[in-house]
Each structure stands twice: as structure tokens, then as C-alpha cells.
Amino acid sequence: MSPQSKQEYFEALHKRYKGASRKEKTMIIDECCAICGYHRKHAIRRLRGYRRFTKPKAKKRGKPAVYNKDSVIRPLKQIWLTANLPCSKRLKAILPMWLPKYNEHFGQLAEDIIKVLLAISPATIDRILKPVRIKYQKRGKSTTKPGTLLRKQIPINTNQWDESRPGFLEADTVAHCGDSLMGMFAYTIDFVDIATGWTEQRAVWGKGEKGVLEQIKDVEKMLPFPLLGFDSDNGGEFLNYHLFRHFTDRKQPISFTRSRAYHKDDNAHIEQKNWTHVRQWLGYQRLDNPKGVPLMNNLYRNEWRLFHNFFLPSVKLIEKERIGSKTIKKHDNPKTPYQRIMESKCVDKEVKLSLTKQLENLNPFELNNIMQMKLKKITRLR
Image (cartoon, rainbow, N blue to C red; front, top):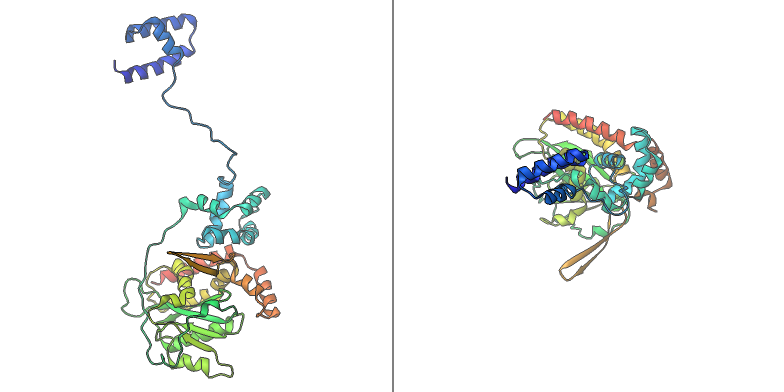
């Protein structure tokens, strides 16, 4: 009999020996000695001191888990998914604002669960959500064709990083072309205010100068602050006489500037929003049905702008220092564009009151549900 067979035999024999009477134990020992060839005392010692080869699990040291519970993970994961997968620091910032709306939409949470969620740290959020995080690896195509007609008339601006007054916009176009630039397809014009992070999006069919100008006029009307400056890349949809006259032929001309050619870092604010506010939602699929453009604008002008500007925070760079080969950056606390407008001294009190009243009637979970329904209608038209 092999050692492994003896081990399995003693495991079965031990169960019988443990609950047997005195006479039965004598018979079991006799059987063991006859089969294995052991001395009687050796067989008794092995049966008495037998230990199973599977070790029991060691007890976890320390306090019991506080956050690793379904009652905590479930609402945290739901808010994270509805907010379009923000980082842990931004998710931590929106929890106090989103939890009351969560109670209205999904039912009341227990008070102890709410306290735990409000006390959770960004590092703990990263640990809890690590198994469900989604990685994006797709990349798109560049569709910027240089406009050369007005390069001398429109100055280059590279110091827009320090602007603190609301009203200075960066703009760019996002192509919904899929894998091919052939033919006509929809574009999204993306706008972001440098000081507050307030964003607006509009859809156009192609990159015609008049179509882009119409959407810029519509965005200017819906901004909660007056437009003071407009900065774009060197694309022909922006560098044209239609837009140039629109900004300069008025009593108080608007500062119209452009970035350096082939320097995307000059428009870092809008390049970031192209990803978080457009690509993460619409992806890189091709939208080549003109009927989808009105549906996109209906979404952009209503639920889209409310969801992103009232409920999704972002961070702003405060300080950047280079030490040797390392660059150390410091950011402020995450805040929504609405919160930055409320803190700004350059925005009228009437505008702040109207935005506050508007916020009282909004629920991010309801807005997200409507957005998902409209996005499905848009993607069906491909």
C-alpha cells in the first residue's frame, strides 16, 4: 500500500474510530494492524493523533470589514456607473450630492450605510471597484484640416491656462467617422469654459462653415455667462470669414484666438472633454445618417448639458513644479461647473439663483435614464 493510499485509508478509518465504542475500537485497531502491518501501539497513536491534511482557514486578524459589504458596494457601484466611471477622487466628491437623489430613485438607504459611504476614502474606493473597472484602449482618427485663409488675422494664444473669469471658451470638433473618413458623417462640436469647466456640445452634419456658425450662436445664447473669448485649433471649420465677422463685427468684439499648429497641448482643456464628454458616451462608431443630427442636438441641449454641468465634478491644476526629471502637479478639490459658477464673483446673482432653482428639480439618475434611451435611438440610425 502506498503512503498516499494509507493516508486516505486513515482518513476514512479516523471517522469510524472517533465515534466508536471500546469494543469497536479494538476491532478497528486489529483491522488496521492486519492491513497496514503496523504495531498495535503505533496504530493507536496514529488514530488518536490523526490530523487531516487540509488545513483550516486562519482567522483574519484585525477589525471586521466595514466597506467590503454588498450593502455598501451596490450603491457605490451604481453611482459610479451612472456618473460614467469617474476616478475615485471625483467619485468621493459627488457622493454627498448624489446620495439624496439615490434615495429618491432607488429607495431609502440605512443611516449607517450613508455614514459609511460619506466617510469612505478614495483609496478604499479604488480597492472596492478594482474588479469592475473598464479599460479603454481605442483610439480615433484626426480630421482637422488646416484653414490657411485667416492665420495672419487670428492671433495665437498659449497662455489661456491662467484665465479665471468665466466666458473664455475652447472649442474643437469630434468626428463620428468610425474607421473611415470617406463620405459624410456627423460631427460633435465640443465647448468648454476654461475657468468653470462648463461644457456645451452640438452636432453638425459635416464641417460646413455655416452649420458650425449656427451651433456656435446657439451655444452663446445658452451660456449662463457672457462670451468673452473664443479659442480653437487651426481647422477650417473655425478659421473662416463667417466666424471671424461674427466675433469682431459687434460693439464689444470677442477675443478670437487660435492654438499653434500641431500643438494639441495648447487646447488641453477641450482635448480632455472630447474624451470624457463625447468619446466615453458615443465611442468611435460611425454616425452617417443625417436624421441622427437633430436627435443628437435634442440630447445635447437638454439632459446632456444638465447632467454634465450640474452633477459631474472635475479638478483644476493649481501648481506645477519640475524637480529633475519629475513633474509634480497639485490640483484643487473636485467641483462641478455649477459649484465653480456659484463661487465666481464675475457671475450675476440672478443667474446663480436661477441655476440653484433649476438644480432642485434635477435628479442625475433620471437624467441618465433619459440619456441612455436617446443614445439608443441615435445608434439605431447607423
